[in-house]
Amino acid sequence: MLRSTIFKSSLAILLIVVVAACGEQKKKITYPETDLAEAPLIPKPLKVVPTHSAFGLDAKTAIYTTQTDPAFEKVGVFLAQTIKDRLNLDLYVNGGTDETVERIIFINQTDTVGSDNPEAYQLYIKNDSVLLNAKTAEGAFRGIQTLRQLIPETSNDTLAERPMWLIPSGKIIDEPIFEYRGAMLDVARHFFTVDEVKKFIDLLAYYKYNAFHMHLSDDQGWRIEIKSWPKLTQVGGQTEVGGGPGGFYTQEEFKELVDYAAERYIQIIPEIDMPGHTNAASFSYPILDGTGKKLRAYTGTHVGFSTFDARKDTVYAFVDDVVREIAAISPSPFFHIGGDESHATKKNDYIHFVEKVEKIVQKHGKRMVGWNEIAQAKIDPSTVVHLWNEPHHALKAAQNGSKIILSPAKRAYLDMQYDSLSKHGLHWAAFIPVDSAYVWDPATYVEGLPRESILGFEAPLWSETISNSAELEYLAFPRAIGYAELAWTPAEQRDWESYRKRLAEQTPYLDRMNVNYYPSKLIDWKENKYTFKEIEKD
Ligand code: TNX
Image (cartoon, rainbow, N blue to C red):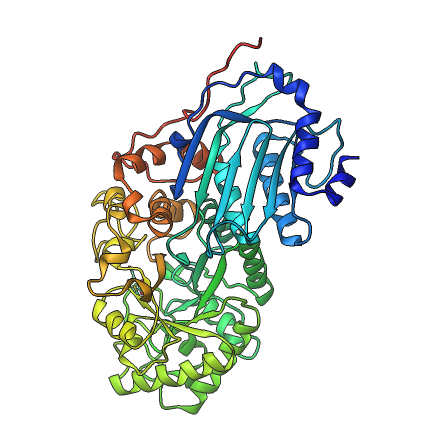
């Protein structure tokens, strides 16, 4: 049995066994010329060296993984599942026999990938083997996204007795520039179901995002069950912009999302926006309110009118309960407290609130994140400042040792319209067409912000104007694909002309995933181009 060989042998022996087993088969195949450097990979890898031949993915391919770390086998199973879903091939993962296996994809744990970056990976693609090296299962997971993107749309059926999908051969050495590569979804202005959120996470994973920030509360709705304050969802969860039914996630459902994202090596960062943007919470529990005005459910889109009472002990008891319950089901090291546009909070109260809440977040074992306004308070250097509109706040926080997440609204906001004809979206910050979303550099956007202070990049999607997957996808795609490249690929290697060609070739994937992307006229959308000529059998 091949299986027993694998348990005992090193990769070298394994490769010899497999290659020997298919030596005869190998002679019969003349692979067409390919060019790995032309493959429409997004984000573009750090280094690609083509060898102009191919690996033939077919029913006699098996996936093997390092078995000392079960997470590597899981990555193998994930790859097998995507191949099954797409090509209807059932590939063994750490199984199979000499008769059933002719070539292998080996997902290998090794400490020698030549980089300290935990997401680094190397791919060596040859005629009969694909070797994916990574130090961590996370790196391996990023690597299999590259492999998925390399599988062409059509098989070359003249090469073997069975369909064979040709993956161009060569070497890829890759790692991201930013450790935090996120997207945000506002599920408060409009609620999105668990399945809608999962679909978005799937798309983000394919483009190597590793963070998904959920804006879970705002004036128009409270979206996560808090067992010690049940009215938050019984009352505050029942509204949304425009008067729709709203909705919320039970803690079980939130955990389901956390696990789903974690299987894709994406962390979910929960956000409870406070002390402003809190009408839904105060309407549910009027004791929290600091406006003194008559409270009613809010389904409009104005901001800045609500606030907690920052001088009330009950408010901090409430925040403690909320942070404790969410922290207990949220493995991310971060907890986002919002803190934006608190126009109804007095400045002193705002500062007092942020400083007290930071202690609560830390008590529950998390690092606080807040929108850039929080830098007005005396925050701990471990706290992360999320830049959206006022760079001077980010600069001040960075001087004090804080790390910065970059989401400048003029360039990075997924809810901005593409142009004045866009069906959905706002334009208070800018119109952001597909090229303007791509042609800039987050790392140098804030003058004077040192590179070491940047934790990463995030593209927020606010949902005042969208309420389902189709509308979400219209705003998020294709721009989120370009943002994935801004956060992964070094600036020197980014190029609009190259990107727009590669983006054009995402059509088959986006269509297969039933993504309602905005068909920007700046892109010559292609179908079924990424494939290789059929050649005669000899
Ligand atoms: C500003 S960005 C907001 C949100 C809105 C968004 C709409 C930020 C921290 N606050 O409350 O939804 O603009 O684009």
